[in-house]
Length: 177
Image 1 (cartoon, rainbow, N blue to C red):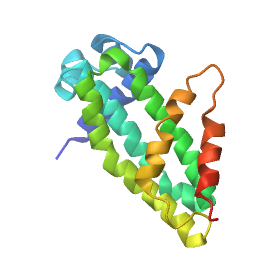
Image 2: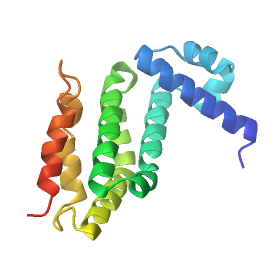
Image 3: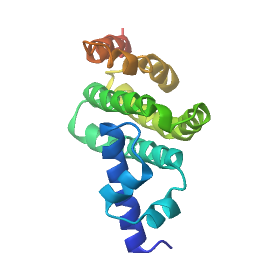
């Protein structure tokens, strides 16, 4: 069992690293430790490398995004919940790719493999809610939706963010005929 202070340190480190990666893209481990208010030993005990830290930040972000599905579905129509959820996921994908030097190609592959199942499960829940209400076509597949939305993070980095427009086209294709 992990002590509460160790859990709090880990959470502070992840929050500090998330901010540092967003600002700098390549913060030093010492910068992250200082920002989190922990010693270098505490940081390295939790995350032995900057890549391990970057992977944990992204994994934590995906878990947070996946965890929002029930709340979104409780307050929005399935299509609107899917739209809002997808835009948040696209932003996280853009940040993952923006980690650049912090993640090796094999680390990008690892995090993709680790997050694929939970992301597909979240998309399945969103699509199933729409199928149940008749607002999403019955043949909509989570893997197809993820593949289509995979290009949206690139659209979000162009001079004019085209991701919302392109997502609207994808969502229009999900409506029953």
